[in-house]
Image (cartoon, rainbow, N blue to C red):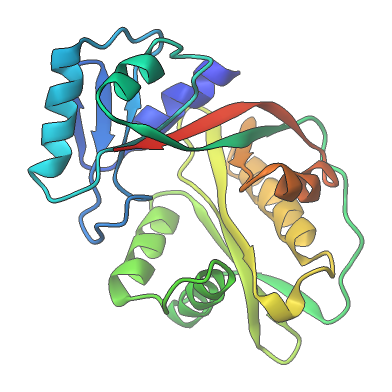
Length: 243
């Protein structure tokens, strides 16, 4: 399963550029390091020259050289990167679904598809607040809309009075694999089971899109507990590393 997810991580990169055994995805609307990163090939054996070329590809665009990948699938990459000054940012839990466990209903919560411009903006606003980021730009909203319109799914969590309280995404499926991403809940609605409700809804939406391998990356081991409550289990680690 990890090789399928690694293949998905490479194929899902937008504006792809190949450098040696690396696939880099460069965002067309943001210089955020979380949107601009490389993924190595399975069992990649990068040379020092490959890594130098990789660094140059980022620096020529005034971007931080950065990778996100599964070290279990590409075990020889990290030593080559560290030799060139890369430093580990984190080793995030990679989680896959065994069988969906329906969470309890949350009083006062509505989960609706972000299928209009207003709902998409509300979703993006809640997600950015949840992650402590500035309000979304028109480009951010357009990026979410583009993913949805290419075959993904966007979800808005709101109160019954219409207050945006969270959201999440199913990325565009490729060969039956897709990521549940951006799952977030605004601070005032946390510890009520909202994240679990969002996750379960995204799983059902992913299955409706033909996804057989839904996966997600938890922010840390503590956050992973939310997802285990709806049937996800730890299946590996995702390395975030940059220079």
